[in-house]
Length: 363
Image (cartoon, rainbow, N blue to C red; front, side, top):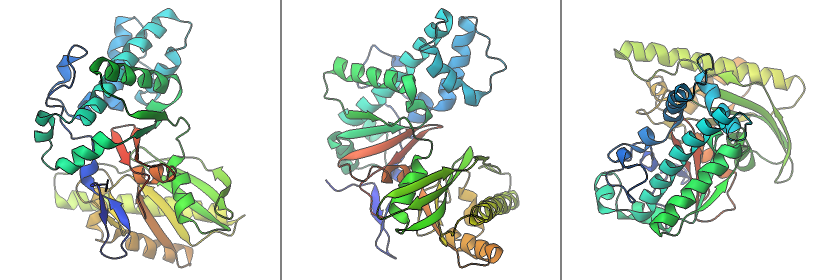
């Protein structure tokens, strides 16, 4: 079946992911199965399952079990949850099991919602037509990656997803866990966008951090991979009091991105002959260098220029005194490229929200 979430560029006929693929704003208008957690009916997918929702629940559960996590940063709590599932500390283990079960069942209910495509849930998603729902019904494989899909926590989630489908008497998706997903987007970009027998700086610019790596490609395969230290993502605000504030923040973000890329390129070029092509995974829906102007912290970059990739190329070329070419790719699409040999599959990153990418895309 043709993927209704993929569009074709008028410029070079490559495919790109349309913003309507997003699961985060889907509404669970009617539960496909009652008796597990009925209180989530009417909520959006992102409110039901996301890292912030899980972190908040961990803090509530820790208080009930008299576990002091007050000095623990929010970013470390999912890792603590995964470790707690195999801990010898009975209280920590019970707390972790409780949270994992709650959100594992929630994840199962969300996937069951997509699989069953009840009329009430169809009506609540006005930007999806019947083909969109049919695609999710006929899909075979769901690849889960990201921090929440790793280690024991991911395995628990998979068990609870299957439990929900078993209770509903519905054949489940083939759930695959990809645990080592930290540089998945970087590897996906390198496999598809790098020329053979070259070395390149490849970056993954997310909402919370930027991952960087030197990648060497041989004949059709990755021949070497050297990660660099990750850097924080700055200037990621997405709401502003005025257009002037928005533009100022956009230029601050742009300047920061240019500095990160230039310093990374210069550092690596001291010991490598680097390609002039820089593949970049970015947390934004993009095609032909054009960013989506509505969603996320990178959307404001549209204020700088309609074709943001060309803006970036001009500034990088001036700084590095080379004719630099930039390939911007939606971050979840970049991750999905790693699984390009899989048919009828979707790659879902479990993080701040749901990231969706399709391995079948041709870019």
